[in-house]
Image (cartoon, rainbow, N blue to C red; front, side, top):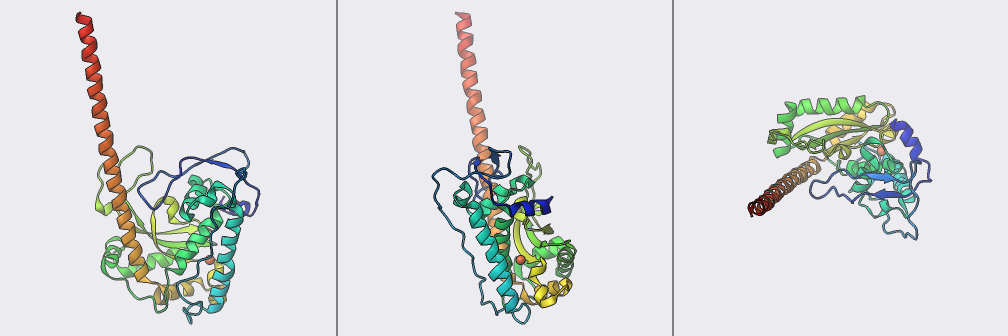
Length: 311
Ligand SMILES: [Fe+2]
């Protein structure tokens, strides 16, 4: 199904979507954005009289294109970043120009067009832009080795040991059939099932997980916080390793991973989870106060009607 959608993404005529209230990923917990399509076609028409309000730009890696040599060649970066990544940016800009989507942050476009799994045409380009930005920033010259501090502690808690984590990550990356990604992500304690609540929330529910995803899909769409990724599309390693994906994965883990970047992302993910919990707690308290106020009003009305009956 995803493959079919990827093909559909190449088609360009699409159109107006009536967006429900705008959501954001960066703040407090937000319900998943959703779309109401005004047309049976899977596309939207352009807004009447619309103007371009934003244009996504190709973000360069945080190091020169030859900085990862000899582990990842300049030629690979020139093709992978300079052509593939650039192509996703150019294509998405063409797809969203003049629509409601061009006013959204990239993360919101991803969640909105993921559309709870019923993927809409701009999703693949939007997610691939985000994934590649994240991938470049997951590496650094002189990377690899072991993580440290709380990140290492959580890896050891959730996988048993750093070596077992590497084994699981390597397995996810090497067994992703066809094109896709492998991820280390922080999974907060959340249930996306309407009004349900976890009756026994615990800090240990928040944990690190290894997941893999096909094509452009990333853990944002499951409401996880990505911490590390490896691109296992063939364009990521073919020039340097030909079909030897396992060798590429080994070099990535041993020589390229920026554990500093992963640690920073973990801090942000934890802060985000705490912020959401506090916001949810505040909303729950407000709701309880609202309910008790309503009960007080009902009691007042009841007592008044009782008086009238006795008169
Ligand atoms: Fe790629």
